[in-house]
Length: 97
Image 1 (tube, one colour):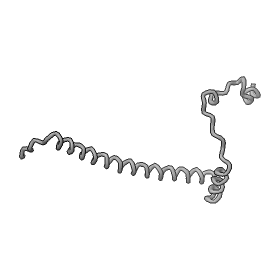
Image 2 (cartoon, rainbow, N blue to C red; image 1 turned 135 degrees about the vertical axis):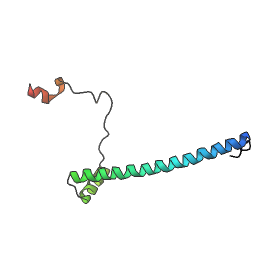
Image 3 (cartoon, one colour; image 1 turned 135 degrees about the horizontal axis):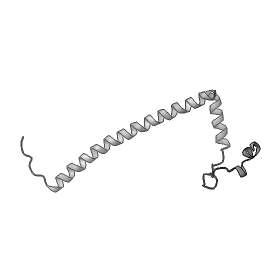
Image 4 (spheres, rainbow, N blue to C red; image 1 turned 180 degrees about the horizontal axis):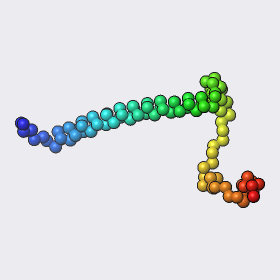
């Protein structure tokens, strides 16, 4: 095996940079592929949910149009709003007692 000629520090840095860039290109391509796979799976889940509800494509499109025209209010996810309901303020539990 022939000995490699000693490289200058600049040449070594450039070689390492090129190697890192090659690995980045591979990782970016993999990330793009994963994004496409995720989107396909999300699409399949949406189609499954729509079919499970018995909606036609036209009915689902109409529902989305109505939601776009009259959006739902945002969900309050503050700790105060998400506290578990106690029996004191839950009318269903009071009726059962």
